[in-house]
Length: 122
Image (cartoon, rainbow, N blue to C red; front, side):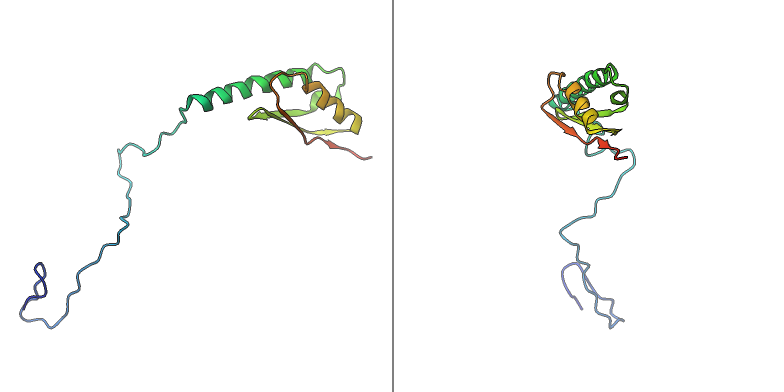
């Protein structure tokens, strides 16, 4: 008794054999020693150049804050990402918050200043 070209039933069984269907999507298995499908580090020269520029801008902004005549402004932290400078920290007055923003405005290359400094209201 023949079911199809590849499947045959043994003569002494009454069972029906159904062929195993494989889905269109094959499971991907990780093979040891195989190279990764994606490189671990981003090697795009544009991304690397932007990261280097952001690092230089951040260093300049930190130097400006550190050299401020106002001691409280020296405690403000900053971060640069995509030419956007973000200021963070706490200051005792709104005036000092504005001073911190003015100090980092001197850095050439900063497009946007995101002033997230909080003011202590005592």
